Amino acid sequence: MVRAVLEADLPGPRINRHLYGHFAEHLGRCVYGGFWVGEDSEVPNEGGLRLDVVEALRALDIPNLRWPGGCFADTYHWRDGVGPREDRPTMVNSHWGDVVEDNSFGTHEFMALCELLGADPYVSANVGSGTVREAAEWIEYLTRADDSPMARLRRENGRDEPWRVPFWGLGNEPWGCGGGMGSGAYAELARQYGTYSLDHGDNHLYRIAAGAADADYRWTEVLLQNLGRHLGVGEVTGHGTNTYQAVSFHHYTIVGDSWDAKGSATRFDTDEYYRTMVKAAAIERILAGHAAVMDAYDPDRRVGLVLDEWGTWFDVEPGTNPGFLFQQNTLRDALVASVHFDAFHRHADRLVMANIAQTVNVLQAMLLTDGDALVLTPSYHVFAMNKGHHDAASLPLAVRGATPSRTVGDTELATFSASASTKDGRVLVSLTNLDATEPLVVELDVRGVQVGSVEGHLLTAPEISAHNTATDTPVVVSDLQDVSVHGGLLRVTLPAHSFATVGFAVSA
Ligand code: AHR
Image 1: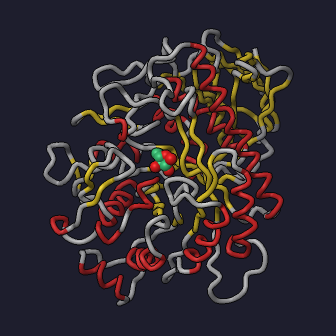
Image 2: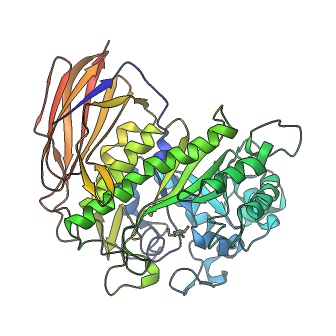
């Protein structure tokens, strides 16, 4: 049994809906086969874009989509991906499978996809192997309305009106695949690129500087120190002060002993399951670490923190291209996601965006495609069940007494995770029981409001390794049966290895 108190009349920072953002890279079958099947495909599509995938993501209220990478972004030259498809040059996708990319999915296709999804585009510019001019012209091409050279080119390519592009990333993992730079060298480059990343007309870019790996707080500090007023921190003077609005970082949940042995996505024992959860829970400490550095330089929290790649990373499925990063997705992945979201909600005062890597067919995917079949993964269901947190006010939820836990190696892993928010007269509570074998009774003392009728949803399966395929879907959402409310006391029984959401109307 665990007891917790929910202060339902003390709304905190807004949980930005962009914490539920997505990421699509030219990698394996994410773009090609995932989003894009081409106009001549038998798979139902609109202008080449796979409609079942679009519908499934629309059902999540997908807030944004980051593209074209990832490592791919720093090899991508946008001009190769516009104009008649048959005239587009090919290139080698050197990071991912060494395959030839035909550029049939480019800027217009991506923007059409975002329009179909109702998602905000997050475009990552090439800093590693591109030029400042190339990046500046891409923005002009995308967002300028008048008769400028790039706006004219866009019109020649069939799009009259400019698009709205809110999110603009400058480089990706510059310390690694994005150019092998040190933090100081990247900060210099970022200033240069930022200076020419202009707002055209009424399109206002939210510029995101490429950030640290995991707990490399020093990288974040160097960015804060060196980008100075370019980060919106300090004095902003006159023309040419195109500031960055955010810095990013990446953090993957990787369990294995080495990069070459990360473990199977579906075949793991209980010990490996708990070790995965220890890694997942580390996101709380890492978020706090970056936030603390940022607080020192930006106490008014004008600069956002963006986690633009996160999720599990296991060995690829046997027999698949190692460069395609295709892995199955089990209930374990779903619980990794739910634990991350609880941490995200608690850091909503600094964390403004997060993007799961990646949306379709790659790493911790929401969706898997198998020919013309579409599979909703367990992780997808967590995103769906948590939809009510989008743009809601976070609520303080604190465990009273001992948090259930177990010792994993030299770490004490909390096996209960929870968070809550309020919006439109309702409260949504997310509850995770990480215990592999034991159910958990949760008593939640809801304070400050009258609790109305309660409804709950549950995600679990007999096995933690349960996963969905085109022919078998053991991991689906069901109604939560074991939930009751008496006065302000909510009582829920969570089965072993399960995630649940409980929603209720509130009145003063
Ligand atoms: O998501 C796969 C890769 O992981 C991305 O391309 C890169 O940014 C990260 O290392």
